[in-house]
Length: 262
Image (tube, rainbow, N blue to C red):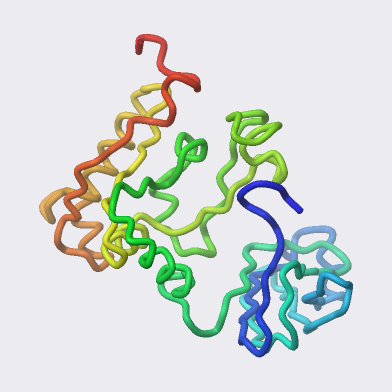
């Protein structure tokens, strides 16, 4: 149990299909551990129930070439379990690039449609903040435009934010997954009928903060004749999103700010 918010429990529903996706590689050939890893070239993956029963197992190849390889395996859950876990084991040295477990149906832009429909049924049509609160000062929106497998986790400092004892992500060593992109978020707002409100990384007001914020506003609201507006258009949304609500950082009364600010 990871505690509040980002728990590690996996919920499975009986007879529902799931797809396990793993991106792996062995060390490159000039690595001294390469030969040992090449000899043990498979990873065992298991989905284990809350009672310790193995619900699904398979193996994935660890490519001795040192190149990333993507493997997938589909399965149907034999029973409903609210606290299943994923176990990945292998010998030797290997790198885990990305791992995901998603339903094979009912998914839209990486999000579960049943959750989206429930959100829509609340009838709420107000401001919907992104990417969040304590997480916002460390979110790098340009990284969020990468393919999902290429987005590294976002790190928060130890003890940062009082939302959770020990820091906002104390139970994951300060790491937070890099979830849906700016375009996915704005598509979600449009689908549900929510008003987008973006929190820019502006805690300390450095020149880097200012430039990154300007670039983000340009990506979201700029015309196709601008650098980042053109990037948005190439990614499939020629028209500006016209977002009008922007937060400058998070909780200005509680967290470190640029010294010249009141």
